[in-house]
Image (tube, rainbow, N blue to C red):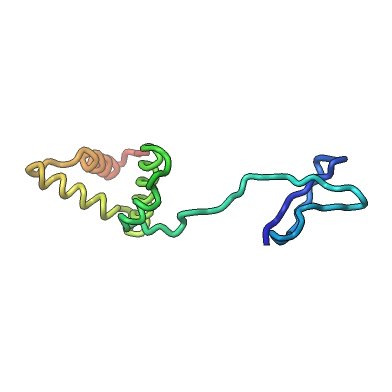
Length: 129
């Protein structure tokens, strides 16, 4: 059953939570004083069970929502989830890098060059953030 908030009209800092059925009258009376209902923005978690490997889940969760930046942020989040499951490397991103190299006569993607440079510097003892 949902919770409803009511504020004391005499002391507006005093708020009480009441659990009521949807069919109940939404009012609270205490000591002859009718308390004022406080309306809040509902909160809920959505899209919590999206499979980071599923293209159809990605499309379903981004269809008609937000702008390009939001979609890119969601894509980065899914990539991070895949990397966490696979030991640090996103297999879909790695496959993209392989295809990039094949279609460009063996050229290495700039992100791979950066990663290799950082790995070499780490081996030499330099601290990299």
